[in-house]
Image 1 (tube, rainbow over the protein chains, first blue to last red):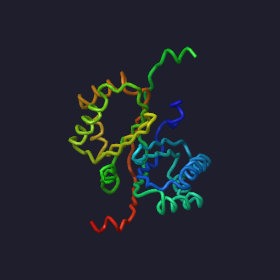
Image 2: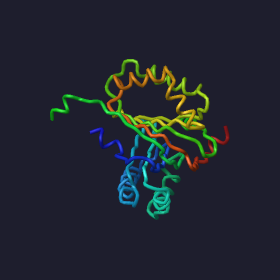
Image 3: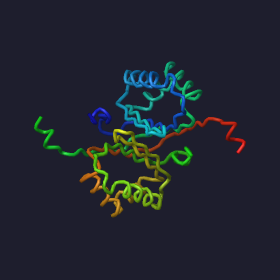
Length: 119
Length: 119
């Protein structure tokens, strides 16, 4: 289950967009558009994956991973994505910070679970 | 209120550690250690800030920001931090991914709120 929450990224270097945002209390349209943006991003050239979470106070962090800065710029300029961002500023967010980063190194760890190894 | 959730980072370039993790169901000791690590990190040379959130399923993303890769390495080697990471693997997490990144560019947006401008 948790595997779906983690992005299966390649060996560095690659790029990331770190999007930190405070949701407003406006729900109308948000979930459908958020789902559509995940779907749309996944179809973009250079898309590597996404990790996203948000707490009960509406504070969220979404990190999308990309093969190159060019891929990030192309996604930024996608017209449907631009329209969604505009709606985000008009309704769904009260504040956000967006940072574009180059992933230099990465490592992970996962618990060995004998009960699951047997399945 | 939300201002405390966002890191007040300088103009790029600077560095980030993106820590994506699935919590286990073990609560004992977690909150106290997590708070201590935030306090300890904040006292490290080169620390710039932290943003963190986790949903009801225990999937969390924490991004800490640093002035240099050297600052990140020094924090990685801090003995109390090492001990906490060991506890994390033994008890508090089932999986995590850690990525070290160089922030290349950044921008933010915040809603203008006349009702709050007046206070």
